[in-house]
Image (tube, rainbow, N blue to C red; front, side):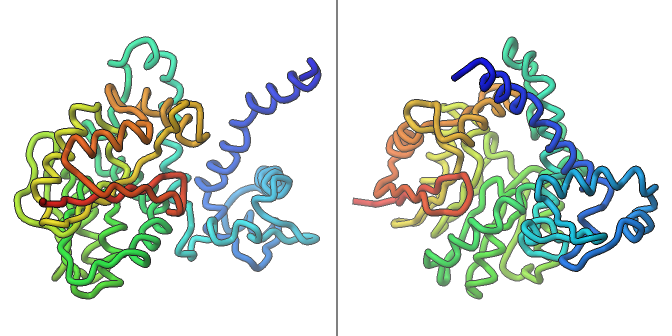
Length: 330
């Protein structure tokens, strides 16, 4: 690559933060809450947001340049990203944008985290209700499409489910809404359980879904389940804790019971795929001992925990990979 091209590309990479902050700031001032697929003028937008026109106009034009929003003569509107930025869309990512702000602040600590693992910020230590709400919004945005994929492609008729570290509860809720005879127990930390119970109530599923306080590294539920969900969890823990968690899951599964597990796994070269490579860096700032596992590493951990018929599913929407494994009693 010629020096001129090297310089150009390096500056583009370094300046990537500018678009990120543009989108986040637009979200924070409520712009995406008032924009729709029908146009609004600069004056209308300024009045609704209680902002001066000359302060909001560069933001609107910047978003238009990057094709985040569209402009037709004097009107601005959502078009290409309408489904993910429209507050009324089931697939809106506004919660994820809020969640990303908490992560981006932690990147300022990356240098310290590289030098000293104790500088890492554990995402779940001393979790406040505000932190939990932000986390939930991000996780729900991430889980909408994968949860529908799982509900539509696998049979849960009359199944009992244990949802470990259930996050926003989106997977259990989605499956329970499709299968009217499913029951599920979510387990999580106290602040998460509060919000999960609110969601269960909002969905009118109190008769079939419950949420209980558990720290899976300290105590684990008893019982017998047809399926156990372990979505976006294993990367938070070192290998010995993942092995212990998988063994606990194995013990509560019924014969032929299934483990559904997702994470952002690395290929064996550890330099692909892109999202997982970046996620491995994120684990340095979010956990003391967590990591992005390779496919071979997670498969071996499942095998050592006695799981069989391990199936890798790359077709699930999003950057994660789904693994399904069974408890087979010979």
